[in-house]
Length: 139
Image (cartoon, rainbow, N blue to C red; front, side, top):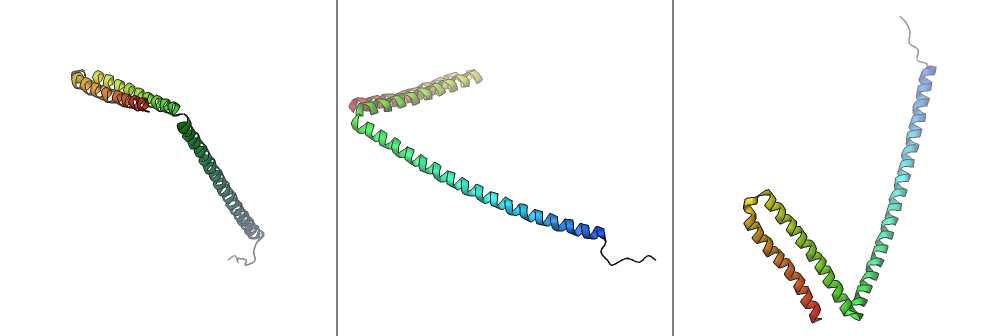
């Protein structure tokens, strides 16, 4: 029978050294990754704080400009409000028209009820614009 040697062989020593080196490299990489993550988290927090501050400043300056315009130039503010209302109503009427045309194209037999709902909807949308005009004229 062959006797087994209890002495560590060169191969076993080399394997143990390689394991220790790999373990050290892995620990170093883990530490470096944690450092990079911490730096990235801190940088992201700084960017978020800066962005929030900039957004608040912009909102405050925009609010001040709107207040100044409304207080010093009420007719300009009313015209802007009417323009925004007219643009919104125009978009709404366009979408309503597109939906009515699509509904009629999909089901020509339902064109009567679709037309009635369309006319009522467009009349309500147009009344919003007229209400805005009346408010502007009262101002």
